[in-house]
Image (cartoon, rainbow, N blue to C red; front, side, top):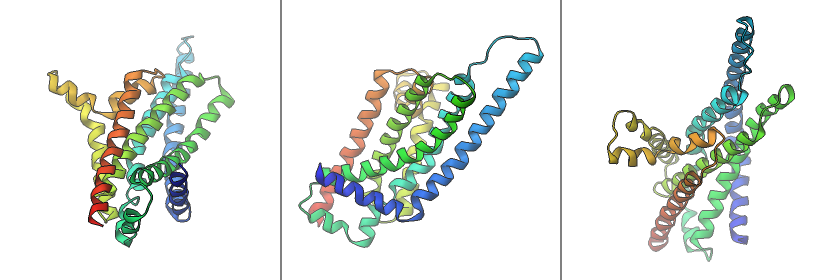
Length: 255
């Protein structure tokens, strides 16, 4: 684990030594802040309209603010994750340092885990920005914090899944733009796979819909923790890292 941590720290330093991390945080803060503002504005307006019409039914803050915001944050991740993973191995191949990694005494699994963990930590740092928005809900209201934790667990698992696939794609090219574009295409495809279930009910359609990351995140956004969704994300993380290991093995043989 020592080598994993060394590689992880190196990657994190490269992120924060350049404008990459700060640019992604600023982009995420601006977009998520706008989504939060809109969700709160709609919640307040609907609440005032309800009172003016004489309805005393309290509105669910989790349903009107927390859940939509979590879903929107997961959409933002489709754009952030390719930017995080595109340089992991593509930059090493472009500069020629991939040969040093491939021929070093460090095991492939340690290299892969170190880079993936660094990408995940950066993603967690970016998600932490959105926690500032939710803090305002506790200042002016009494929302249930448990669905929020479940929702963030879903965001972390979904992010880890897509980061693992992006890590694999980064090993297949030396061009960061190509790696980022391909990762975004894969992330978008995994996002829209569940659309097939809206017009098809055959067995193959259910299988395709099951592979969609949205299908498994919706339960987390509702504050529901289900083992099958956790198993899906963990399986996808393992699958992505396994493909990365096979790709690294081929690089080592060629080196």
